Image: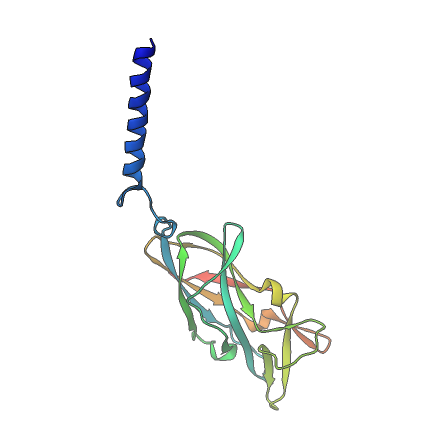
Length: 197
């Protein structure tokens, strides 16, 4: 019995060694994680609905980063280089601006967020990156609850196709997004994402 057992063990060890060598060789199954992840493009635009406030001449926001939500965490889009400042009142009447063509893992999404250069409620304003400009050239800072930490969220379902492009617009709508609370102008924490294509 022992005479047959030793050759069998040696044969199994030899076969296992051959398999391990083949798997480790170039062209084997050692696929890099970045090659295994399939991606697509999010073509992201920003627009605003017209405002009927006669005395407001500009609503400015400064975006530091754009992030997407994936597998329970927020990930920064490297293609967007901030800070970038936008006057939302220039993005009405069918006008929009391209924020970027962002490479994302393919799949379904329900939210992205904009990290803004914006004042926290209760903090003394100093050179705010988000503010309202009035007809008399005066300005008032925009505030947002916990905006510095949690960002300004865009909510809406969209799918990034494999090796394809989805076109999405973040619809700001100043009339609904900006709320006057006493002497402060507060930005609501979410806006709507609309799939164009």
